Image: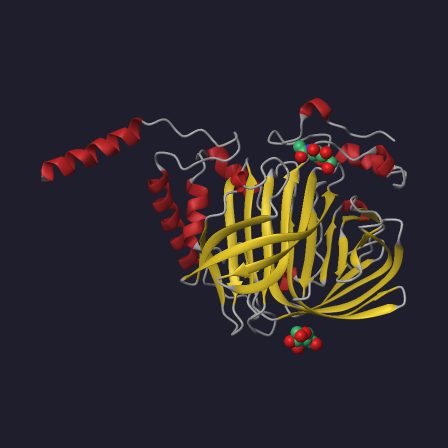
Length: 432
Ligand SMILES: *[C@@H]1O[C@H](CO)[C@@H](O)[C@H](O)[C@H]1NC(C)=O
Ligand SMILES: *[C@@H]1O[C@H](CO)[C@@H](O)[C@H](O)[C@H]1NC(C)=O
């Protein structure tokens, strides 16, 4: 009996040794290869050592301990690279469906990429007049935003001011235009979740172990690095739409990403769920495919009403099984595990809008305002789907740009990365 088991084991090992590496699904999603478990163990060990060595504490001039993210809670100086960036994003909603999406991705030349949406039950979805284009001009150095959007950090990891003044259209009937004045304060309720340090070691090791390793791969991984953190809390305030004022009491997620380069032409797809439940629980799950660095990156966490934050150990959501054709499913489900609990998530999309990010519209973002049910508890929030897009920024959209912008765009995109996903046959560096 024993020799049969032994022989079976040896045969399985040999089979693994001689088995070919699996083909990436749709040529984009790399699958765990024959040395996956060995690589996984090596990664776990590395992460464990890194964790042991990183126990230093930041202190300010008086020797007081300072949260390591405090210096990120202000407008960052953009680096040399033409694609340097500093981006914030806020999403908030209440259980009646009132929702707010507003962001600001700062780039060189005082250009920002920002959407703003306000969803008011009974009235409909209001959006910035420029949407689906998000190139806004004339940003200043005292606030994130431009062309009506103004977002300012007040107290690190605690308070941000979120404001808008301008005109918005109704999605249902774009001929209807409203004067909108938003006055809100974001208050952080949970500690920030930092993607550099707080990812679950199992999911982190799995992500890297699934890739094919080489010196070049690790170089790419390092150069693709961006710092990113999120924080859950509340947004309170008012929004005035023409002569009606609505008071806002919203559950909210915000994030801040910054780094030397963000090249949206490298990013193939992501799905990002922001979930707020009736019992006060808030959760975030994101699954990303950026073929040159990570083809099945996943991350998430749950914020419990008592104050605990649990990071996500695994998630069974597969991007390539959901809307690979560019049309995200409205009705779907997935599971993930965090803090010892398995969460079964049911998603139902209710209202959809999309916009483009990037000076050549290289990223198409679909915002799906959704209802959720997680382990029987109802909730609401947003399902956000990103797709790489090569169709380019149309010249009629660019017609109102400042004169100098066309040249800047040409220069910025003149030396594309070898890993660019842009369809090289139609690189539409537009001419005015
Ligand atoms: C904001 O609204 C939430 C939910 O209603 C509430 O718990 C919180 O105290 C409010 N915060 C402020 C600063 O008003
Ligand atoms: C890019 O976006 C346009 C406009 O929404 C769409 O027609 C086209 O199919 C998209 N391309 C891809 C590859 O998704």
